[in-house]
Length: 211
Image: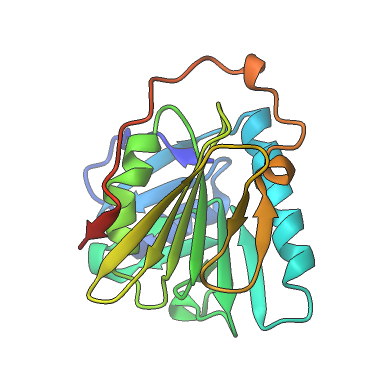
């Protein structure tokens, strides 16, 4: 699920007010430096892609010192005073929690987002900028739900990130954070592209992204 980028009516909420509201809310919202931002529901393709990636990662990381969390777990980004709900996060070792809350973590190594039409620019732009301030964060995977297209950002030296694109069924995503390889055919298993409205053409991105 993804934020709609439209804030609620009240002008400002504290993090504590947001968390209290979120505990009883019918639908999830993100927290953007004082604003509460409602989230949209996911499509069937979104769900299929997230499920396929979760299964692949869970199987290949079994018995290793990693843990995979899905969209119900929040992420706290202290530098930008934000709570988000990434579609998927991979933690190395033990989770570190925000104020001992077991529903909010602070130390993802890998973040995976399934792109929606309304927020893909945000996921590639400002949200990635926010994520890059997290010390443990090493790898960012973006999965398009309307075409077989995947982007991988891997942290390099001097705050630079390498950029890779995957867009063919017979190729596989090779994670840079751990020895795991997942084919695009498995990630997009049962995804029905004809059921989705066509998206605008993906913009070209530079191979290296600086802070």
